[in-house]
Image (tube, rainbow, N blue to C red; front, side, top):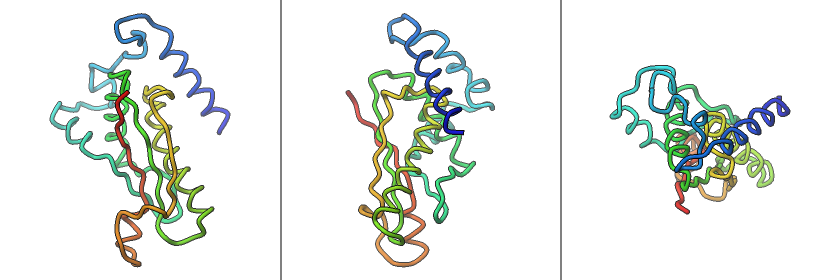
Length: 163
């Protein structure tokens, strides 16, 4: 599975560098970007797209790095924004709740950040535009020692940075 993912990400990178235009992105790279039906797989209005972009925090289940299905369209919207603006850079931060060792939580936070980053890149964002970092349990979003706080802390966040 990891080898297949590397081949896909590598081919996306080659496609992103293969064209010549004002943005430096090839026409193939931007194919489907202006057609919501083709890009998202369904019709999305500009207002719906803005609502999808408003979300930048994605929560995960306990001990999981599987991206919930309801978050995929939002990630597609972020990928579209990233690939439309080549100077945009994003950092995907992975976080966990307080349970587990520091080492385990750093690794789990990294897997969460990579899961989000992989979706962005598979949908067209360049690997040079997306970086990941894991904070494990070091930067909780919610204080507390109950399921409500733990749920908020099991997350990945997309942080936009401009070059």
